[in-house]
Image (cartoon, rainbow, N blue to C red; front, side, top):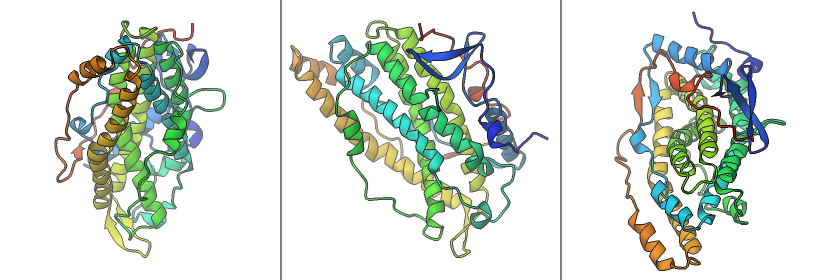
Length: 371
């Protein structure tokens, strides 16, 4: 039987590297073995997640899956971004990459998410599951991956390095952080399941939101690798694209542990604040579908409007502002969410292997970004 219980120290442990990852002069997590990048904190995290998924499969229980067709494309698209860079309009891209880096740093806050006494909120025992390891390793590993830990940089620093490698240390718009801190704010979390303890529903909501954001990031990675890896517009295309690839590799365990834990919760009976019983599938599916509807309809439109305004302002000082704007608009690709009715999630049986989450070779070879 595969091992399903791990200590926090074990889940935070990394393999031994031949050499470290130095991102534009900054020591970051992870490293290289035989020239291939290896993600941090996967010595036991990877087999643990595989074992928890195998446990679901043995019980005939499915894994949650978010269809790729729901992922909104990045704006501006690669062709538009490259046009701006060729024409010397660099601020929008510098802003985007800096914003991504800052948001990655905010990912450290997941370690502060309160985790309940599971016996009070789940009817059945959760020993030997991903659920039982959220507080003892999984959230902490996620936080360290995103923001770094002690002397090692994380994804925040790696995105900054990718930006600086590609754009040769561009000037950063001075209002990036302020815009993030004072941006559009919602009306607060709307409760879907008031029967649940408020803190428990908040935990489930956070997990659903982070899972969807992590899945949707796949398009951002593809966009960044294509744009930053183009030698026509990137100062150091090989190193910049490789850096994005390393981050992409690191994110796979985040997707897998979150969808595993939510799939486990989906199979359980959840307990309300006053002893009410709710089907885990009703709660998890409801929260995920709400997040997906927002992030496939409202959020992309708001982000596109804001980005379009920034791009128009940046193009205004170009020698042929009107002409550049027309060329930019001609490269536009329209997208609408394929569906918003019914359940947007899929259910799939866990596979016996997790090739995209291996802590060994992930197809990202050493591009020597440090030198």
